[in-house]
Image (tube, rainbow, N blue to C red; front, side, top):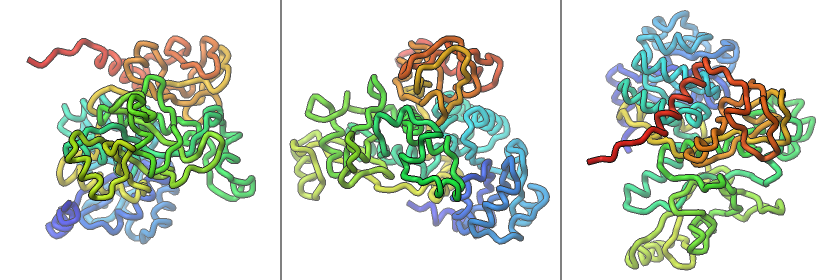
Length: 452
């Protein structure tokens, strides 16, 4: 509750948290808009493959040109300015950086950046949830062994969900379900970059006049991003996916307590302690009343008549039994809130969510019938979408992680709606990302010693 006071003290002491941002896209730009006026924060460096894009982001978000003219990271650190470079390695290896933010969205690059942070003693904030879903449990373990903090990014929905789960558990409640809202219909799984815009209501003129990335938008629509984010939540909280993955039940905020409870008490959930995403539209396309499309939620249960009475006395919406209730946050501010992670990591050495175990996984799943010889094009593309699975089921299947389903050739045909397996593709066993993921699979399937 006192992060701002601690930041002000760092500013007064002349010891700001020294931050480097890798990736000046939308999320990174939103963070920059707030970092410029946050006490106790010094963005020493920004790394982007296009330095001109980074400069444009700074100008667009209110930075004065003289604040990012430093020629070197050392000069930026000395004079309180910001240096722009085109190589993320430079900011990670610099002795003038304390905290690195990876906002690249590239899972292979994210793995490389985390391991470099381990080598050079830099805390890492992972906006790159794609890398976290691919290999987060082992990345977090390596970070802990290196004595650095590995954190999910506050403002993104996974960290906000983790916060709600932690709140409920710290208050002594049993968490029944947690997740977020999105717009979903079953047909969206087959969407491609060619079909995505009508689902969003964008006209050709709007697309032509805007700066829209069709594949990125499609990853949100076809269910992939939801699967990635819920895998991150599952691994950070221990809440588990349903055996069949996400089901996206239509549900508004007033019905969370009724719908997001187990089937054996009249709800939708496969089991208590589940991650799930709720849809903002009914299956016939009608809008859900008071939907949670932009927000996050947690449902929890009263274990005594006394607590049930307290729910009633303080006006909580419950199910018909009076025992199940919910808390929700209707919006998330994405990069505008990222400073909470930076402050928590830098001042308290505490992550705003981090993987604890390998509980959920995201498996590449065919959007249509795929034939041998085709090249998979990854997240939001034409060939596959990401499906959430319990990690144990994914490993037993030999499922190909969605984060490695880009630029690989199919060896076998895969039916529409079927998972793609490692054995179905010609993957490069020598790539860093493949080796690291395979190592994680071996570590988390090894027999575990029981505590004495």
